[in-house]
Amino acid sequence: MDKTKKEPLTHDTIIGSKKITAAEFRKFFKLELRENYEEYPLAWSVIKTSSLHKNKSLREIINECLNPKEILDTNLITSLSWSEQKKVNPVIEDAIPEVLSGDEKRIALGLAEYFRENKMKPFFHLHNTWKGVSKGKIIYSVLLINENKWFHRDKKWLVRLWLDNISKYTDVLEKEKLNDFIFSHYHRCVYCKSKEYKNDGQHPKTITILGKEVTDFGCWPLLWVYDPNDSAVEKIKWLIQLERNARYS
Image (tube, one colour):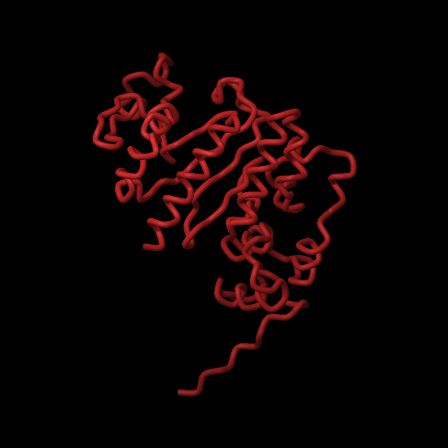
């Protein structure tokens, strides 16, 4: 049976004018935006949910990726909506000074530099949130807090750690006296005292951490470190390195 060869996507291809697979979009964006095409939120959105961009040409999509609208001229990064942030793909070092100052700003910028130097580049993820990956999976995120402050207990910034393989390095945690840090910063449920959520079967959760049962766990990832100081950041680096080693072992 003869199969008609599909024409490759071009700049003039209109999204929605024909059936286009995610693989075809990936191939096109890889050619146009190179290997890091997934770091462009708009390109990723087209790959995942092309229907949101129906009737747009791929030329328009590429232009928006490479030349985001000048909405930053009159707005702070952290005041933009998520959809606006996705268009400009903000760099975390540009956003940090909008929320933090003094030592907090220094510490946050230093941590961002550490991530870059260790091949865990922070790239835009969610509203006011940047993440880094290791072995193809998220390992940390950084949130700059300018909303939902009641949920975050009026803190300014948050580092979350995905310690998926923590069971593989429990001996090191004990040796380096990191157990106390784990138990001080696992995510405690903020709804525990709320009449609306208390005893709903989901808030809080009971889980086991390092062989110890805790009954006030909130939600994943395991560690939520608010407003870390220099000492806390050094422990964060320790934990990230242990997790990375475990993922590659």
